[in-house]
Image 1 (tube, protein in one colour):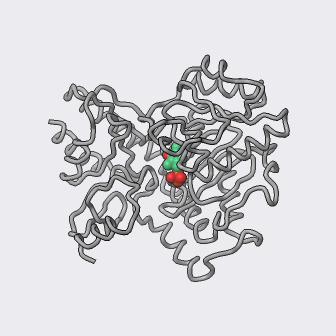
Image 2: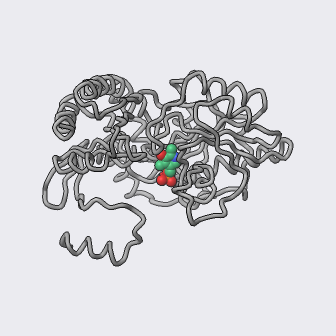
Image 3: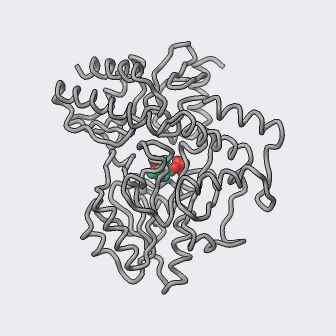
Amino acid sequence: MKATEIFQVYKDNIMPTYNKVPLIFVKGKGSRLWDINGKSYLDFFPGWGVGNLGHCHPKVMQGVRDQIAKLIFVPNNYYHPFQAKLAKELIYWSFPGKVFFCNSGAEANEGAIKLARKFGASTGGRFEIITFENAFHGRTLATLAATGQKKYQNGFEPMPGGFKQVKFNDINAVKAAITDKTAGIMLELIQGEGGVNIAARDFVQSLRKICDEKKILLIIDEVQTGIGRTAKMFCYQNYGITPDVMTLAKALGGGFPIGAMIARKELGDILTAGMHASTFGGGPVICKAALGVLKAVQKEKLLANCRKTGEYLLGKLNDLKNRHPVIKEVRGMGLMLGLELDIEGKQIVQKCMDAGLLINCTHDKVLRLMPALNTTKKEIDKAVLILNKVLQ
Ligand SMILES: *Cc1c(COP(=O)(O)O)cnc(C)c1O
């Protein structure tokens, strides 16, 4: 298909649920993408954090190739070795507990909400879940209710009940919202879609304490922050706490769709046969891909690289801030970085794209950079050069 025909088919036959950029990509390797005309781009925003290893990582590709030749699908009423192996790896990297496998971030969060409700039902008829302003937890109805932002909910009301939004980083607001019906508190430690807002350490530790006291589940949504993005395997490991429930997706499959919900040991048997399920969840091909991702993070020392290159990029972005007053603040952790502007960021994203650099703008005024964890200083220099020119 030619480019013009592809655009036309999208227009005629695909639901317009995305704001589209007129680029057609056909090949990727590491932090590089090539479009249909052969033009190459530096990808500093690989799919909202899907591409922590960059595009087409060999460890992921090889594993998937091997597995596809042997067995593609196993129904979840049977066993297969790679789901077991992946669960063991995830528990090794996180905390003692049990995993539920699904296919996306929204599904992982939906599972966490169901688990919290089941837990609440058996401990005093509790069902409420407290979430935070500017959160993003997904697009299914329950996760949309948890997300709590009008711009995503408009036209889809009534929302499922049982969710309460409070101000992020405001422990008194949380305390005021807790009732004898509260079963869980759910949050991102860095709000990705909400503008790269970082949870304060004392806030998170206070949440942990309150949850312990009141037997409320602390649910951490690591869909965007997980798998090494913040220079720890999971972002909560920067905070000196352990969640009761953690959700994962995006980077876990190295580009293949997978979601996971992990609950600590005592909660591991709350959801039993018949209560929750996913036909494709944790299939052999996907698990093999995810095992490749975790192996690459370890073997290629990507947590250390993320810390090093993250600091390097942060330094460069702070230099940009000193040179361009349009940048109000630079913030982030590891390689999840945001530049808050005092103008709309759309045009800057567009101009960077024209110059061969892919970045994102969230919350209207926050440029978001989330390069692959194996990105190099040379690539960072190139990206910063483009950004500098565009800002000028
Ligand atoms: C992307 C995202 C989700 C939703 O994930 P999907 O795979 O798109 O359903 C949930 N939570 C956070 C923090 C996300 O960034």
